[in-house]
Amino acid sequence: MPALWITDDVKDSAELSGYTVVDPPSVVSTHLTETLKKHAHELLTREETKQLVEHLKTTHPALVEEVTPNPLTLGDIQKVLRSLLKERVSIRNLAVIFETLADYGPMFKDPQLMADTFANPYQDKLHKL
Image 1 (tube, one colour):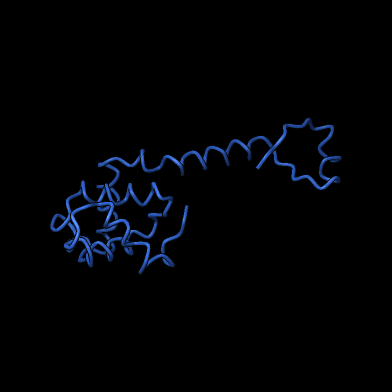
Image 2 (cartoon, helix red, strand yellow):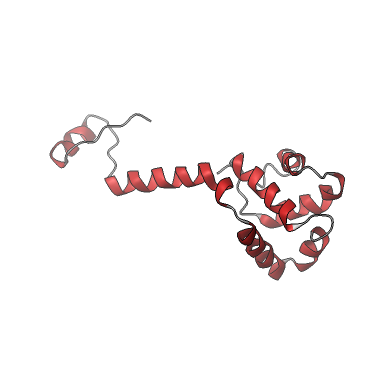
């Protein structure tokens, strides 16, 4: 969205003219959030992936055991999660992702193909970032 910086003395006039006026901290926060979303796939490390898996294991131990280390290694899971993040698909619902990995993981060795399987059965449960 195109934007202009304005001074405080014209803020009221701009709002009365129908413009949306946003304070500078909100602009910076929004820009930072969008930048992080855009590059989240580059920031997800193997160690962070392990922490995500360990956290999921506390609530869904059988599911985690079914997925890792066989048929998928921690590296495979990281690649799948990175692919999803690159497509700006949220990985917040890791249990749903692991359900799909349990169902389809043994069939695919290509993490991108595994990530692509999320587009169909679970797209209503996984949201775009």
